[in-house]
Image 1 (tube, rainbow, N blue to C red):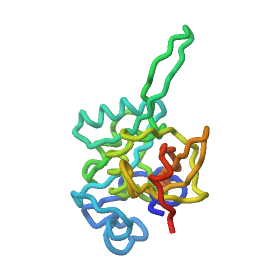
Image 2: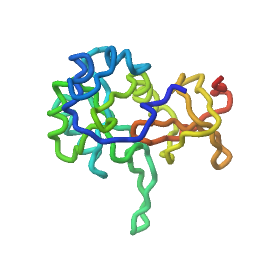
Image 3: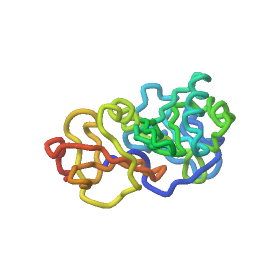
Image 4: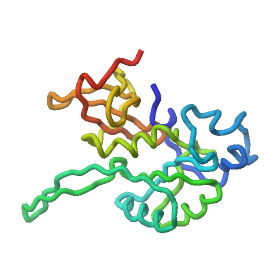
Length: 211
């Protein structure tokens, strides 16, 4: 599997320990060997000084935070899902809601961490309890390029099951767990670092077994 994120328990931590431009981590405890890009498979950002991170956000403030980030010139990504809501007056409307409630993704250099953390409703940068951890650049970019071109639903975090790879079209190359719901085939893609998943609607011919 090439997961969207890093396997392990979600932790929230202070951003001050991580500095990609200095080789990965400041001298605060154990320092991993090599650079961050070498130690994390799939992490090949176009700009080696910038990495994708997940921000932990106060719930229902995700859109506000994304707008604030963009106003500050910070590259941000907030995946959305369109759902139909029925109000008390029986009027229905389509509403865009975050696919990963409580999270916004940012691509930042270590010099920008303070700018990000000082934004209202940003709680912290997700990591392993000691330092923030970057997400694989290739998978986040695949999400950015392909999520809006497929039918995608929020799904409870899922880690075990029969695995398959999307062969064609948007999100091609990503791997996930096969499920069936309402007689329709879906592949559940997960970001392990934040323990969140989404279900992507697919056709059987779009998939191949992971071997």
